[in-house]
Amino acid sequence: MLYRHFPKIANKEFSILTLSLEAGDPAKNEMLLDTAVAQGINLVYAGRDQQAIASVGALLERKGLKKTVSMVYEFTGKTADGLTAFLAATGNSSGNYPDNFLLIQVESAEDAEALKAAGVFSAAAQARQSGAAGYLGFSVPPSPDAITAALDSFALWDFWATDFNYLHRDLVESIREVSRSELSFISLDPFASGKLECVPAEVHKLFEDAPVPRSNDEWGLRAVWELQDAVSAVIRPESPEDLFRKSILAEAGRPNSLPSREMAVLEAAAAMLVK
Image (cartoon, rainbow, N blue to C red):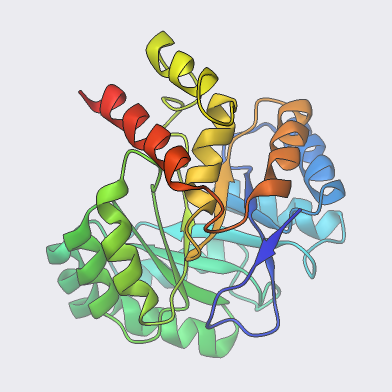
């Protein structure tokens, strides 16, 4: 497994794959987590549902992993009191998980202003200071305007997240802009909700005939890992075997490693998929 770091998080490195446990049943989650840890994955995504987040936290606690595996979870509410209640309901208000990643969902420029006015960002800062939250980040739709607004709405962000994949090359300049504030990001949807794993025949043929033939999911992950500002990509494996295979792909996930002729393959695939 390869690792990268967030510029504002000192002395810690994180796997370039993040395992999603947001929707699995407990037995499957445990099997996936065991496989992930064996492959060196130290980030898990617990999603937005309070009960699911609490369940993932309890699983990490039971496995003795809370100090070695960090959890990413997302607050979608709109009030400061809602954030306090969310942290309590998910089991994070006691400061037991200081290395967890709290995302604040920002849906638009208008939403950023509303969240700021409602005191949500201030409440997040207080939660971090008290130990109820670890690292603070914003999650946004793949929109340059939303990214810029979220970045400018609060000065204490540690990281950020969006649904980046090779269909969103228009975000690269925004990603570079955010990096000037020393923020790196997590891709929440590297496969565009499965669209980039089950590609049409013409795209499959393009990948098959590429200078270096690769599977659909390898192209999807390599497109994210190509960016040096991307720390990790969230995957939702079907099975431990699927997770193991994607972990093998992660051994080649270095930034700036695809030559121009291979980047051209991705651009051509994107054009076919969005036409």
